Amino acid sequence: MIHNHLLKCCSSLLALALVCSLAGCGASSRAPAQPSAPAPAEEPAAAPADETPEATDEGATEMTYMSPDGWQIRYNAKTAEAIEVDAHTAQFVLTERSAGANMLTVSVLSDVEPEEALYIVTSTWGEPDEIERREAFLPGTTDKWGYGRSYTDPEGSCTQTAIAGEYNGGVLLFELVSHLTGDDAIDFPVSDTLAEILDSVTYTDFAPQQQYAYVPGVYSRQQENGEFISVELRADHSGTLNIHESTEITWGSTELTTDSGVKYAYTVEGDTLYLEDGGEWLDFEREKMPEDAYVMKTDFTGCDTFTQIVDRLAPGSGYANVTLDGTDVLLVAPDVYALDGEEPFATEAELFIYENGFPAFLGHVASGGTANPLMLSGGKLYTAGHHFVESATLSGGTSLLTLRVSETFDADGNVRYSAESSDGTGSVSEDATLFEELWSAYGESEIIVFNEVK
Image 1 (cartoon, rainbow, N blue to C red):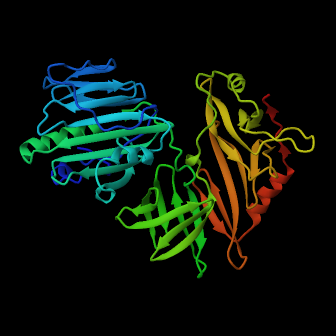
Image 2 (cartoon, one colour; image 1 turned 30 degrees about the vertical axis):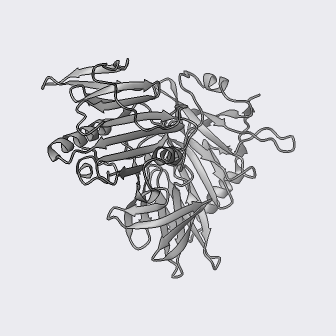
């Protein structure tokens, strides 16, 4: 049976067995389509080229279908067959048809958004208000988000489910169709088998999703009584809500859901999060973006040296070599600037070090704008913005240790200082000492000069 999936088929039978999940995304040029009919029994479909049989103790043949788009599905050749529709589409058709075709179709699409793909698929199902909508983690993942639709015809004889989500720059679409006989002895095994096939999906490389990359962060608000409340949303769609009490949440496109099932409507506009609590909309201001929300931009696949990384950088980007705590570090900046004839500088950069003789990604640093270039002093890298200053250095020679101090103001102009270290320690205080010390260190540091790629 499927675990950690949200979509549930509306049929009273299928809902009991096929607890369907949301689907993923991919890269194909064709439009989403309804599942096609399986090949006639007297004309067996050719087996996909990339299938690996596995003999089980029971003698059944377990097959693994490996898509060139990076997903794999396991199925039992005694109960289902795989049909390769095209380079980006495969169907898994149950050999026992029961009341009609029962199958899972997996497609990788490009040039379409997940919800757009679902709209195309479901446009012929029935009335929009009869289609059940869901959001949750995609099949085979615990940190990738997706969307689903399910519909059962008025006769209750056919249930259709579509699941879609962003996947490596495209959309991975799962379409399930199940025809019901009304006989539990037939229908339950059908739904169980479809569920097992869908639940078996795995991925060789599921890149971080970008659709909601602007959402993660730590947002805070000071109440009229002076108390600070906060919302933390992490890139893996988990989070912590600190308003009445501290509780863990899961966040989707429009709602935060607590572990106990309580839902809060929310939206993010720029650096402001709006949360509905008891009919009142509260605004929270972003304090910082968590590091796990950052998506690396530099492709250094196959690079054995810093020089090889630099050789493939795009024109307009930049690089610099610095020493942090005695270790050589390569900085790669997406853009460089030169004001009034000064040497090029950068406001953000990705950091790379050598690990076991090969380049490794260390982390990312960013200032608030061109008024605050990246600075270096005493083996530490400094960044700053209007209301924050941060230092970064190496810890143990292999990890980035940062200390960030921010200032926030309430409606009366009172200031609060928040200090947070990447080692998990932090504090909140009205004492400005640490904030002023870091700002002084930043001001006494030297601007890091970058080499611009021509």
